[in-house]
Amino acid sequence: MRCPFCANEDSQVKDSRPTEDNSAIRRRRQCASCGARFTTFERVQLREVTVVKSGGEGKEARRQPFDRGKLEQSIALACRKRSVDQERIDQLVSGIQRQVETAGEAEIPSKRIGEMVMDGLRQLDSVAYIRFASVYRDFSEARDFEEFASTVQEAADGRRAE
Image (cartoon, rainbow, N blue to C red):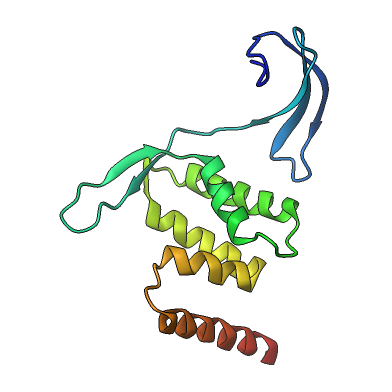
């Protein structure tokens, strides 16, 4: 494994352990050259999946490999400054990645991944859900935001009544 500090390709594994949800192996490594310590994660990858992003009106769709890091970053951004444990974010990301990889398709529309994120955030944190939805659904006016937030509140009130 290449050292992120000095780019030396020789490092030693000092400690290995599974993550909390057993979806990855966390390895602490030490560079043989500069002595720096860093962490790597090893995850199972079932298949290569390509994400198809819609190009909009008159534009061609773009394709790019599924990137767990981008998914994790967008969910973490929606959950920023919220009381959501990193472990729960990791579980959500792992669950979505598992759904994408086991769907049996070589290509998946970005819209479907966005819906998976929305479903997960709806159950995780209502504010994070609204934050993500405001970008994902491209709210153009404050009224769009208010209408969406009121539907979220109505759904929450309905769940409390049950």
